[in-house]
Image (tube, rainbow, N blue to C red; front, side):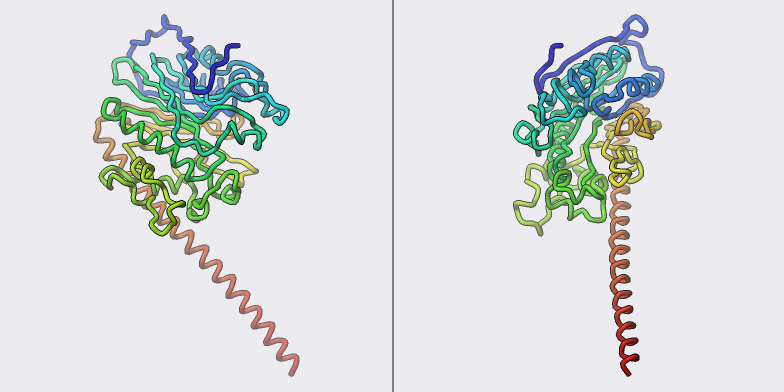
Length: 397
């Protein structure tokens, strides 16, 4: 099996062009999918789900090729072949075969992110400027020695008789904290903004690993950095919505919500991040709080880790598949979307700001509830001590 190197793109095209030519107009809204398929450990179940969905565009993460842990097969090719799709895979890592890996982690191949479609595509790999974890140096510490770095696959998709679509398939770092992931988010915000004038219709999908809250907040491995404590009262997705996704160009060129003047310089976001952390029109229709996409450790660690941002599309409907996590450890996000005029950007901006405002009120309510509970607990303890002292004094007399 020919394996590529990190940063390279592999392509496969198994479309049956006689059934429906690539130039035939789509008679319904576009159906698009976001899913981290967990290395394809249960590839047949994944493909069965995708076959039923019959989506026009798929953004998938954790595509394994030639790794022992997932049967040593070329999952990128198998998915394209069995679904009859055109596809590209951006290679992030060479998974080194090593005795420090257990069988569930054993490598020997490559690993990356993919975009599949029924339509013609061209591809570009986005090498993230922000790499919060040094995998070539420190991967063995986690029992996963590998070479390479995080990169996002961008596909320009030629939808018949409609404007082209830019689709990003991203997988952000999990062994970091909010600061590291904000850097990777800003890499894509900047790229999206630079492309928006000529390619306004965009999908920015991915497993962004936004789970630095709950139990993970106390793990230096999964949530390092000062922000794991500054975000008390909010989950990481809520914090993103309030502090980044609700900041637009008309709010200012620099995202002042991230500019915490009270923090020392080494704990603050850089000027580069402040300039980049401006929403260019992304909108995710899934609920930031309720639409959980991962649930680990018997449900003690849950999060909206997966995002499905659309730009200049109207969302007709959206739902989740793999709700019981039978096929993979992430839920599958499905959207039906239609092309929209630029006015939809104003509608989405208004909705996002309202959501962010509501989340801040929720946080305030939570903090007051915690403070009230703490105060009631302290007063109860004091009352018990006073009562005991009174009883002892009465017995002494």
